[in-house]
Length: 253
Image (cartoon, rainbow, N blue to C red; front, side, top):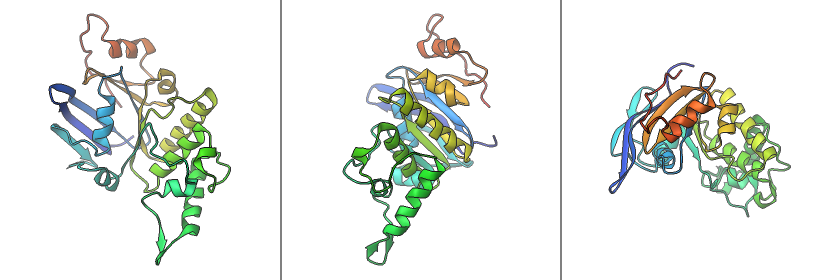
C-alpha cells in the first residue's frame, strides 16, 4: 500500500488528571481502511479530535507525507489533506444538498454565488460515491440517514483529501442504510484515499477494514491485519482479557 500518508507517533493527551491518550501510534496509508475500536472511554473521540486538528496533543508527533506537522486547527488539517466527518455530521437540515456540501466554502463568480458550478460539483461527488440522492436541490430534512451520511462524506471529499476520518458513520442507521454507507467507504478507499473508521460495530469493521487498531484505556492495545485476526482476538484486546494486561502490538501492513 506504500508509505503512510498520515502517522501518529507517541501521541499523548490529558484532560487535567485524566490521560485520554497515552503513547499512541497510528499509520494510515492510501487505499486502506484503518478501523479504530475500543470501549467507551478508550480514547477514540480524543484521537479523532487530534487528527481533525481540534486538539493539539501534549506529546508525540503527527507526520504527514513523511514531514512532522502541527495540526493546530481544523483548517490546517484540511489544508494538509485530512478531512473529518463527525458523528453528528455537522449538516443543516433546512439547507439543500448543494448548500450543505459547500457550506462555508461556497464558490463565487464576482459578487454572486456560482450556483451552476457548485451544483455540478455536488453531482460529480455524489456520482463518484454512487450515492442515491434524488436531487441535489432537495432539503436534507427529506433525505434518509444513509443519504445524509453520503452528503457528509461528499462534503469531506470536496477538497480531495488524502485521509478521510469517519466517526461512527453507521450509528443509529438501519441495516439497509448501514450497507449503503459501508459501500460508500469502500468506494472512497478504492479511489485512493486513506480512511480512518472509528466504530463500535464489529460487523462493520469486519466488512470493510484492512487493519484494526484497538485502544484500551487510552493506550494502544493492538494493531491487527483484518484478514488475519479473529473476532475473538479483537474482543480480547478491547476488554483486556487474560488478566487485563495490554497485548503486544500486532504487525500491521
